[in-house]
Image 1 (cartoon, chains in turn blue, cyan):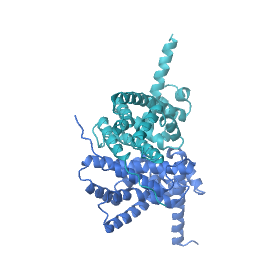
Image 2 (cartoon, rainbow over the protein chains, first blue to last red; image 1 turned 180 degrees about the vertical axis):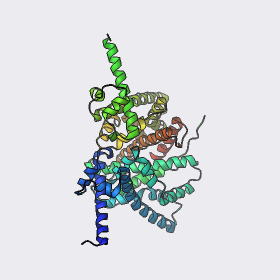
Image 3 (cartoon, rainbow over the protein chains, first blue to last red; image 1 turned 90 degrees about the vertical axis):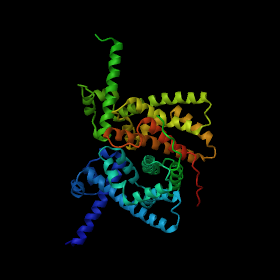
Image 4 (cartoon, rainbow over the protein chains, first blue to last red; image 1 turned 60 degrees about the horizontal axis):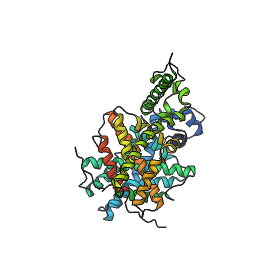
Length: 220
Length: 220
């Protein structure tokens, strides 16, 4: 007999295996071209309905993938923000931009190769019906709000709509740059940078130029 | 009897109707969730095999969609580059960045609303198997190469790998920012800018900060 705790652990392992298999298959074949049956089989589940049983329909599975990622990066970002408060560097724009970028790159670094997570998230972000889920789950978390507020305080001359525009641009740039790098690592193509750490440096440099860039006043 | 020229014209009209229908359905439902049969029906074709007959398999259809877009933007960019040569402004970084951005925004502006093209292209860019097609068709066209070379001449201190990195970032930023705006226009959500022209200005401002941003030397 398996104890209640043992059953709970086993269910948790099954859920993780399903999420891992789904990430891989979505990244390899496209989220629209993968069935729950294929995911169950790739996750080593004898029962083809295992995905539905544990997660429900595809949007629920996508939500679980996004949530697993956000939980990780949210924890990392909150720790970085606490350290930033203590450091006396809260007047440094690069330090805030690092809080946007490094929770993601550090997480991907920790996952190792092969990894499909960044490509999955980038794909969800562009596929109708799934994009809403990513936005709901990851855009206005407490740590993201605090980070963007911190940046706004350092750039008070930025009109509010341009602040929003550059927030969106930052998100798009990070999400898709990380997906491109993950793909290149996986396919053996060339990457602009040799590590996730260096990729983060490149993104922080770029965003440190983008955020305070002069705003052309619209005419007409 | 229809003349040979008449048949050719009609075939061309059918092809355009199929491309339009495919763009709309891909943007609305996701490229992996739309069949050739659905596209044929949406294009008003009685024959369910019309898509296969005119374009072949899905990757060929995707290539035709990308190529239609690239043909348009390539023509616009070549004209902008010629004007830039004549203007004596070829020492102005913003003028070169405009050549990256405005062929796309001007084209979308000309298409009017509703439009699905930007979302389609952004989606292809993240879906495995299709991304290669977008890259092959649109990344190293003559006008893109000339534009990036022009920018490189103005930023000679930029290491070559950072130039490549920022080229990739520019492309990702433009592709996905335009798709987000097109989606917001279509769904009636708020947009940061009130026109495609103003969106171009926002992107040029951002990229004019990003490109010359100081490069942190990697250690270790």
